Image 1: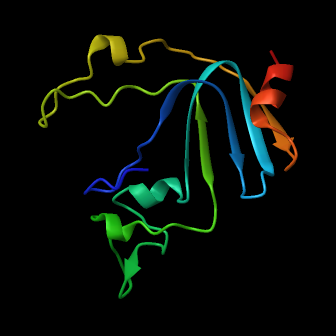
Image 2: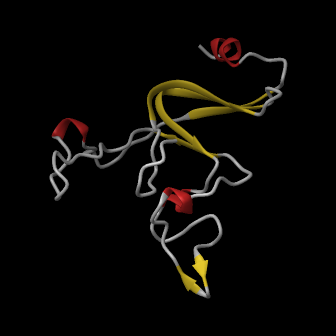
Length: 134
């Protein structure tokens, strides 16, 4: 997570073979891609980064208030995990609407991908478990 001035999703990792999300004791989940994946994880819900919502519901005095500053995004007692096939590049060589370069666009009509989700015990090492799937 990087606290950009305007709250927004960030930190997506590309060309991921596997990702483990664990607690301090090492218990958690292992995601193993059938191919390369993209992944990110936050202690927020997706809408916390949108101008429409925040962790607290985005209301002040009965009115909806947008997340306009990093202080509006408050960590929640959860981990939101995003496992994606691909994401379009953010594009823009300027700040006034330039399109993403062609090599970073997603132009196919259909995409498919798969992954395995497996629980991890505190005594398991994610990298060792991953090798069992390859």
